[in-house]
Image 1 (cartoon, helix red, strand yellow):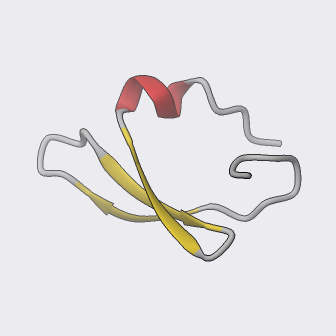
Image 2 (cartoon, rainbow, N blue to C red):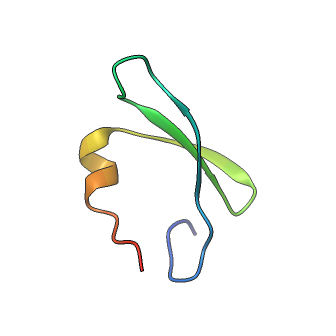
Length: 43
């Protein structure tokens, strides 16, 4: 479930100060804090 190789991720919304942000992947929306988003590696 979630962030795995080859999954498309789209940023849907960002809070006014940028934390948290809402992303969509695999048909569901997920809220992430900046610290959590920083550790995601994009290829």
